[in-house]
Length: 147
Image 1 (cartoon, one colour):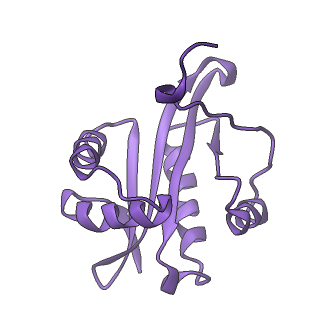
Image 2 (image 1 turned 90 degrees about the horizontal axis):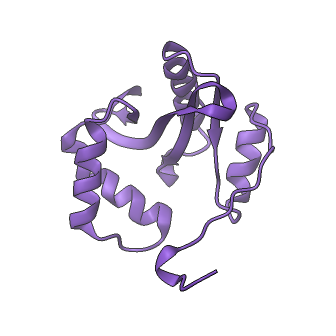
């Protein structure tokens, strides 16, 4: 198994990952646009784990220069390992690569948000050293009339 940067050719498998991760069919045209834009953005890193050249896991990191941290923060946006490859240390290896990348960029810290329903993911993140320090709130703008 090796970890490297995602490539444009990985788009189809990464699209399938997000369908599984989100549990819905995503608009493929929009997904492609976002993927192609982001893969060329220096503030975003897409990593994949490969086994015999087959993508078996994915992670994305977005870098933000934040005032309240007075520096650069790496945000782990997505982390996914195909089910038949779970419990083999792949997610841990991806997180170690993320730590390595964040240190190279001189980040202050790594942040992540995880859906409230992903209890196993929460246990994993706490086990490897993340602390539960914040709540994340969301608001779907298409549903809002006035506040």
